[in-house]
Amino acid sequence: MIVSMTGFGKSEGTFEKKKYSIEIRSVNSRFCEISFKYPRYLAGKDFELKEVVRKKITRGKLNINLNIEGENNSIPGLNIDEEQIKEYYLLLKKINGIINSDSEIKLEHILSFSNLFTGDVNDDVKEPEFRFICGLLNKALDDLIKMKIKEGDSLKKDILDRIKFIDKESAVIAKMSKQKLSSERERISEKVGSIVSDKKILDENRLEIEIILLAEKIDITEEVIRLKSHTKYFYEYAKSDELAGRRLNFLIQEINREINTIASKSLDAGISQKASVLKEELEKIREQLQNVE
Image 1 (cartoon, rainbow, N blue to C red):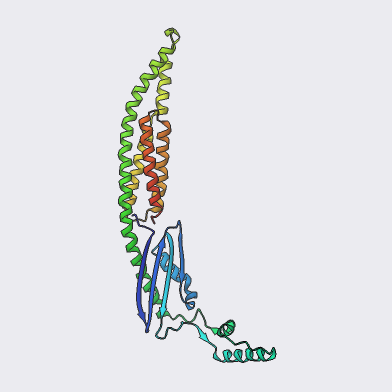
Image 2 (image 1 turned 45 degrees about the horizontal axis):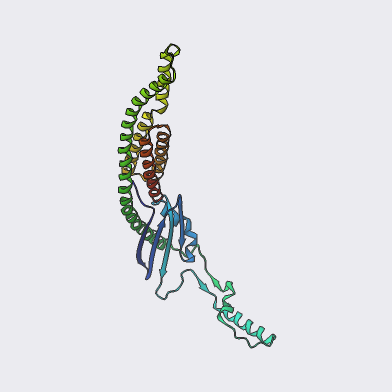
């Protein structure tokens, strides 16, 4: 199954008069990288939230934004110590008097005292609310997956068309190779015959063995058979229900190995040229697979 790593998913919902929205953006990555942005009071649930994602996504870099809006746009899980604010304000005024300063006491002076803001990031998330958030996250993930599958279908068509071309051309190369073996054998015999003028010193049996050995060295039948086997498995994995990105990348490496061997063993310019074209197609497939989960 070919599924793209690129996509966007979104979900929205309301819980206890607060509006929740989740947006997920996914791009390419070799691993599963999850980055969450949420209110502070959910920090204690970071691991559980990421586990929800990992159950549905295996590869890709995901940026997930969870936004919560209350009736009065308050920030959940954050409290203000009003008495301390008053005390700090009076303290700053007193300092101004000590140093005979007319400087205005501004809001940023008060905000510099971080202990004015309190909140327990672990206990403020009630279980019903967290279950609601997990459900909303699953909906956003399902929306993301729909887009990933749709884009994956486009990738699959392009990739399998190129694999089909490689399969077809490898059969042509195999046919060309068989024809070349026969003509190459005759050419070598004629060449040796023209060099060795005295037929008495020519060992016909030895010559036959050497020609056979040379023919085996340039024979690409095994490589073509393995290449066809790899493309067959490529088709099967691409059309299976399994997320096949890693397997397909491995098969591309094996296909590339066989094509390289075919190019190096062949003495025919036509076969070498076709092998170069196959390598170009293979490189295009490799680029496409970088976006497959």
